[in-house]
Length: 234
Image 1: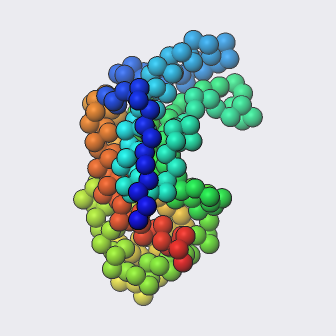
Image 2 (image 1 turned 60 degrees about the vertical axis):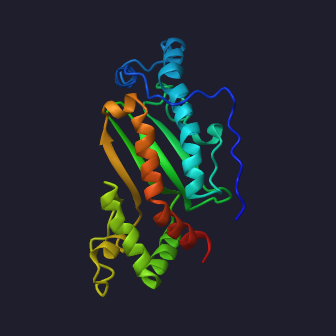
Image 3 (image 1 turned 90 degrees about the vertical axis):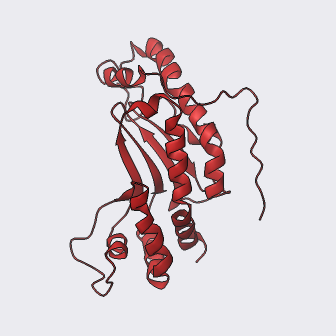
């Protein structure tokens, strides 16, 4: 196995949490996100959100690469910018949320990755498949049916991580012959992601957030590998 070298900038500070005023700033941004207020808001946004979010990305990178050594981890590719797409949000120039995306390279669809999202009142982390397609879902279903035991083990492990599966389900059970409810729950999804949603709490303001996300990423490594094999190696 090729060990990928992580080139960390020498001047990167440790992640110590987000400033406590970030949530109030994002909440107030809903009412004060205008072109006129942009110069002042940009300065505050950078200090409260962009800078600590980038530090969190750097801090999570070693764990992300232990899950999948092929993940894109460059902050400029992974960390959300402060700006909304002006084609659709001309009157609200700044994002009211933030995210980190560690994604697999060289795929236009069914892009597997690890994620972290946060708004003024919540944060979330886990596994996502970006630009998910029905063809990609069929590959996953096929692998689940052919290799039920490893999937069953990893899906049951989600409860231990306080994580669960999200996504729209078919109204009708498409797999009546599958007896295991955990497998059936995944197979009957039109699309899905695995994650944990949390209200903003004290861990956001200290280093515990990093430990919490890192532990979850480590915990879903087996499931991530199964999904990666299903999508890209069959």
